[in-house]
Length: 206
Image (cartoon, rainbow, N blue to C red; front, top):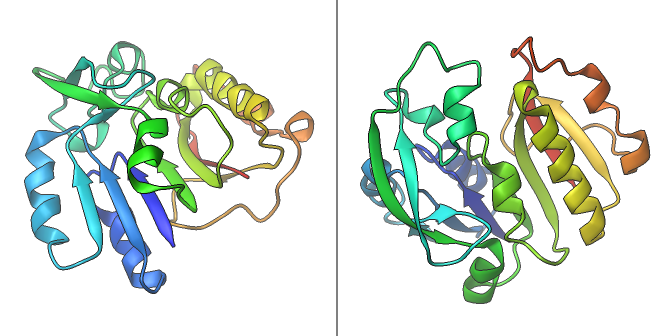
C-alpha cells in the first residue's frame, strides 16, 4: 500500500501507517525545514520518502511558509494566521521560502496513492487544487472557522468524481468515518459555526 502524508509534522501519522499496514510505502511532504531532518532520522530505516516542499496548486514555484512558535500550526495560509482560533495566542515570526509541489506531480513521481492525507493548517483547498483527477481515498483536516474553504474543497472533489463523503471529529490516525453519504446529504456543514472556532477533524472522501 502507498500513502501520501502531506503535512507530516513530527511523523505520527506516518508512524501509525507503519505500525498498522504491512509493507506500507509512505511519501512525506513537509514544508517546515526544522522538522525535515528529524523526520529523516526517525524514518531512516523504513520505506519512507521525505520531501522538503510545500504542497500547493502550482508546481515548482517559491512560496512563503510561516513557522509558528507552535510547530503544529505552521502554514502557507495568511488567512489561517490572521483569522483562526490560534491568531491571538501564537505568532508566525519565522518565514522561509519553500518550493511547491502539486499532488499531480507527486503522482507522476511516485504513483497513485491508496490514501492521500492532507493536514496543512488552512491550506487544504489550495493543496487539493493540485489534484486534477480522481484517485483513491483522501482524508484532509477541517476546522470550522474555515467553513467556506471546507465547502470549496468538497465541491472541488465532487467535481473530480468523488461521490462518498464522511467525517470524524479530531484525528484518530487512519480511522475512517462510520458512515459515508453522497455530497447532497453530507451534513457536516450544518454543524459548524465559524465564529465558535472549536470543532475540527478529518473529512474522508472516496
